[in-house]
Length: 137
Image (tube, rainbow, N blue to C red):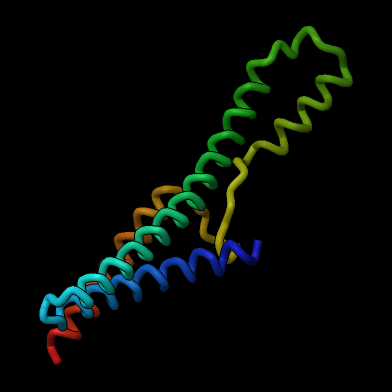
């Protein structure tokens, strides 16, 4: 799962830096066609990076919700009428599914859509900070 760690960290860095580069290029330019074209290229790259990150976070959220649904389905199963071996297997599954399956980054931060919204908010906070620094010069 090491790739997930670098994917999240790299995605946030890429989105922040590319958006900053696009906006500073556009703000410094004299609104010429070349600057607008470069800005559009940068922003389209940023949007594709956001889409890739959203897909990653959405998939992790679906995985977590599906694991919770499996536990609920096993519990609602008509297990009373089954044999001893089946009940034993069912108990083992339920014990294993006591905590839902979660993907994590850096072994401690769970990945879900709420984290993605925080990620986007932080990225754009960094962008506005960098733009203020660039304008101050």
